[in-house]
Each structure stands twice: as C-alpha cells, then as structure tokens.
View 1 (cartoon, rainbow, N blue to C red):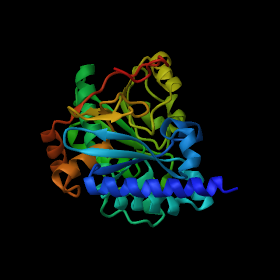
View 2 (cartoon, rainbow, N blue to C red):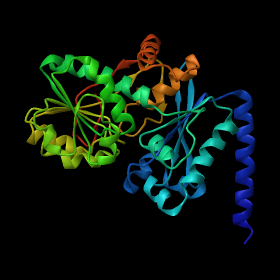
View 3 (tube, rainbow, N blue to C red):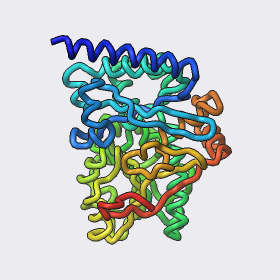
Length: 336
C-alpha cells in the first residue's frame, strides 16, 4: 500500500533536486513545448511510460548548439481533450512553473498552443514566445528555396495559403511583398477569415478557391486537416507543408501520384544545432519556426521586433532553408 505514495515522494524529491541543479547551472536557455496532433500521435512526442509517470507535461529531449540549449517538453494529452476536461489551465500552469524552476529565459509554444491559450484567456507575455515571427521567417525562406528548386518565378505564381489563423495571417502579410501573381487565403472557419479581413488578399471558405494555385502552403492545425482540400488542388501543384506535426504519408502520395505534384516541408537549419532525439517528421538538424524564434530571442534578448528586423537577425545567425521534396517511403518519409 505504501509503495505508490513512496514512489511519488521520491520522484518529486528527485525532480526538485534536479530542477535546483539545472537552475543553478543554467543548463537550459529555453523550453520548447509541443503537443500531439491527435491521440494516435501522442507517443510520437511523449513515450507511453512517461504519460502516466508525469501527467500532462513530460520531458522528451533537448535542442542544442554551441551557445543555445533548449529542453523539449510535451503535453501528453490532446489539446481538445484538455479543454473538454478542464485540464488546460493545469497544463499552462505546469509549463510556467517548469520554466521558473529551471531558470529559463523563454518558453516557445508549438502549433496551436499560442492561439488556444490566448482564446482561453491565459497570458502569453514574457517568458512566452508565440512562434509567429519564427514561422513566418521559416515559411518565406523555404518558399524562396522551393521556387528556386522548381525554376519558378513569383510573378507567374498564383499562391494559396490554407489556414489563416494566428500564424497564417502573419504568413500572408509576409508573402504579400514577394511579388506573387495572386495570393489567396483559404480557411474552413469564418471566424478566422473575418479576423484576416483587411489584408488586401482574396479570402475564401471554399476549397475550390485553390484550384488555380500553382503553389500552396498548408498551415492547418493538424496534417490530417488538409484532406478536405487535396481534391481541389491543381494538377502539377507544388505544396509546402507546415502543418502539425506534418502531412500524413498518404496525402504526400496523393499529391505525387494523383495530382502529379511535389510536396516540400518547411525546414530550417542552423549549423551546430540539433534535436536529441530527432523531432517527429524532422531530421535531427531541422528546426521548426517556433524554435527559431526562441533561439533568436535567446541570442538577442528581444523577440518583439518587427518581422523584417527579426528576419535580419535570424539570417545573421546563419539560419538557412533545408527544403527537399518529401518522400512517401514509410522507412524514410521525410528525409532529404
């Protein structure tokens, strides 16, 4: 009867001692908080044995370089599940306390976490970084790389963006200055479309608005959400994937075989920086936009600059696109 309480006492004591040591040594500069795209994908981020040992928040790896080091932690439940059972506040509090206990400078939130926390009324001021500037930078740089790889000219491209929410609206603003022939934002939620009005681009809730687009960026909350749009894509379309955690392999195969197109992943790299272990769907040296923002903020101490200023800082640090066509091969689905 005493075994389980004793286990938790020892576990909590060990974690407290570990946190104190890490805080004193300043082992980590930032936290990178991820979450499963669906219940089936939980174990891609958080091993099963950790889900019951450390409820809601579990450490799963590190991001390292010569100067910046980050701890990767995962929310071991689906976001919608947390909202439904009232545990979202607990998860937010655990993230904040973990950052304080480890003495970190910044907390980077992946995917939908910034918009979900914001809608639920949780503060996203310092030490949180919301990842939008890092993602906009990563998408723009990856697009430029893809356009060069494909031998395309922006002036001849009808550009589509699927997902115009918190991050997507920022991406659209960033793409407006790239000289595309046309720019269309598509989303299945009228609420997000209304919030994006006034940007001077075509907005639609109809997936058929993508039928004339030669190049499409997917920014849907989950990779599986892209399914509703695939049949409306143009033959020979080039797709850039920045979904969470990534487009399912069957979607990549559909784009390649049925649409005779190509799919790329939004990928950036920084010399000497890598995930240990590698992030799901990424090679170890690839970094998502929200991590880029935390790294830039750690180096420069300011993540609130204008997008142009942020882009310049990230480039000066050596961030480069690492885009390559996605492979459907299940043994190596996303390696270059």
